[in-house]
Length: 234
Length: 275
Image (cartoon, rainbow over all chains, first blue to last red; front, side, top):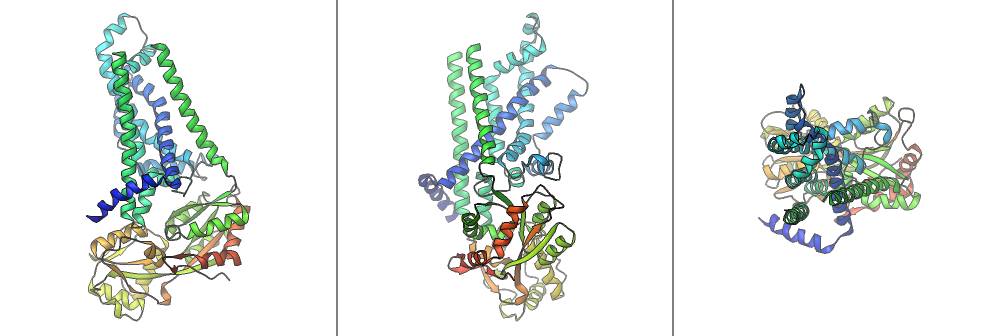
C-alpha cells in the first residue's frame, strides 16, 4: 500500500520541516482541547463526586443520562452548540460562532459526561470502602468530596485522559462550530478531513500520525507524572 | 501535602486561565475581518489563498472562509452567521435576494463542470455530443453514478441536468453519497463510478486512481459564481461596510484580475465575468 508508506514519510517530513502553519494548527488543537478538558474537569469532578455521595429521588435517571451521554455523537453536540451560538440562537449576541471559543464549548459538552460518569463510578467505589471511617470522623458529605477526589487522584488521571482523548480526536463538532477557517479555527482533525477531501491521502494520514503522536506524548507525560507522584507519596 | 495540593491546583488554574485568555485575545487580534460563507470548490482549489492576500493588502481586511456546500452556506447566511456569501447556484441566489436576505447579487466568475468516470468508459459517454446525451447514456447503461446528494450547488446543477436529459435518476446504479465534492470523488474512485465535479476540485484532487475526464465543454456545464450583499435590515449586526468592500472588490478590475491570475498546476480554473 504505497499511500501508507508515503504517510510515514510525509509525517516525518511534516515534523522535520517545522512548517509554521502546521505548528499553529498543532498549538490550536492542544489549546482548544486542553482548555475544554480543564473546564470540563472543574465542573465534572465535583459533579461526579456529588452524584456518588448523595442519594436523592431521580438520581438513577441522572446517572444513566450521563452514562448515555458518553456516547453523544459529536455532530449532534456540534449542531446543538451551533444552534445556541448562531446569531439567530439564544447566545448569538456574543458572536462566538466560528471562533476557537465555540470549539471549546462544543468539546466541553462532549467531555463533561465522560468525566462525570467515570468520576462518579470511581468515587462511589472508593466511598464504599471508606464510608464507615469517614462517618466515624463525623465528616460531612460536602467535606468528603475533596478528600475522596484527592484519594482517587491516580485513577482520575486516567479518567481525565479519556476525556482528553475524546476532545482531541473528535472532528464532527469542531467542524460545525469552528468552520475549519484557515489560520483561525483549523485544527488537526479538521485539517485531516480537508486533506482527505482533496484526495491528498498521504498528507491526511501523515497529519493523523502527527496527531496520534501528540496524544501519545500527552498520555506518556501524564503517566510519568502519575507514577512519580505515586512513588513519592506512596 | 495540603500545600502541595494547593500549589498544584493553583498551577492548573493559572495555566487554564492563561489558555482561555489567550483564546479570547486571538479573537480580538484582528477586528477587521469578515466571515465569508462559500463553497468547498473555491476553498479546496486554493483560489482564496491566492486572492484574499491581495484583497487584504488593498484594504487591510481579512476574510475568514467557512467552506461548506451551497445549501449550508445559504443557511449560515440566513441565520446571520456570515457577513458575506459567494456561492454557485444562480437560481438559489436570486431566490435569496427575492426573499429579502440579500440586497444585491453580482456575477463574479465561471468555471465549469466536467463528467468524470472510469477511464475505460463503460457507458461510452466520450462519444456524446451534448451533456444530455452523456447523461442518458449513463442511465441507459445503468453504469454506477456517484451523486453528491448534499443539496450543494454542484448537486443542484447535476439534478437539473438529469431533468434536462429526461432521466429520472434512481435505481441501484445511482448512488447519493451525501458528501462534499472531495469525498464523493474518493468514493467514485473506489467504486469506478461516473461523477460530475467542478473542474477546480478535480484539478486539485490527487487520489484519482482509475478516473479521468470523459466529457467536457458543453455550455450547459458552465458554473456561474455569484457574490451576495447581505441585507442590513435583516441582520444589522453584520459587518456590512467591510463586506461591501469585499463584494465590490471581487467585481472590480483588481479583483477580476486576481481571479484570472490564479492558476493551479498550470491551469486557469476560474474565469472572471463580472458585468
